[in-house]
Amino acid sequence: MDSQQFKQRESQRQNNFRVVYDYSMGLLWLGAGLYFILGKYFGSDWGMDSLTTTLFGVASLCYGVFRLYRGYTAKKNN
Image 1 (cartoon, helix red, strand yellow):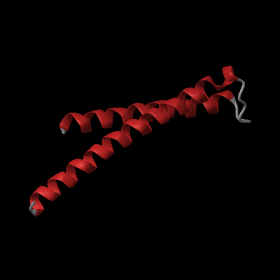
Image 2: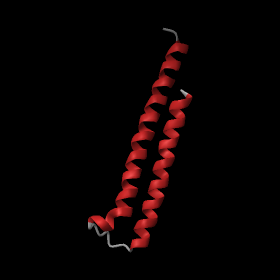
Image 3: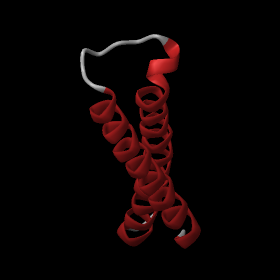
Image 4: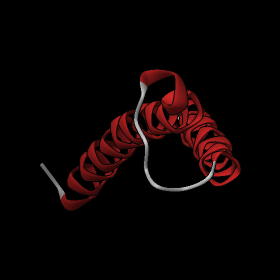
């Protein structure tokens, strides 16, 4: 195997890792966003007002969707 093939395989492996990482982080942020938005219904009290937790939840949801989209486009371009 020459160095060009090695570089190509290594690049492909890194891209696959990035896709898996983006998907997993996207799901994690989506879960955190849902938890903060729906936390008042679960009975969890963070000692913050409802507006703060809702804003953080919406920001987390948006970031989660962004990470999922980034993983999807990276997978599609491979």
